[in-house]
Length: 128
Image 1: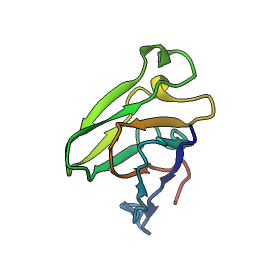
Image 2: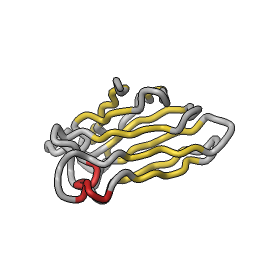
Image 3: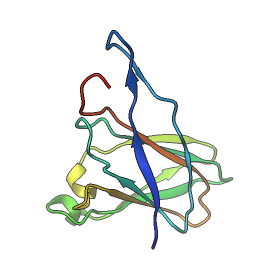
């Protein structure tokens, strides 16, 4: 399966280094393709937020796919429901469960799922 590629978007911090902001670019979800977030964990620890907008007329599941790296991938995939017309923000707590060896994260969507996805995280660089 060729997955749709999602890039993590990083906020720019204003001059006093007090607030960061980013105007997000959303990617339309193709349920048949699924998505891959490249370099999903190349950011400050626990700052990755994956936002999913469900524009369908019914609740539908998304599935975070188990990674191909050890150790917690053995816990398997994890599905979660996104309500109709809702936006849900996910924060990965157990990176080792979902991270692939190339640093990516794969997400599948239920048949008929429509909407948008985007990812935001705090960069590891200073003064971004």
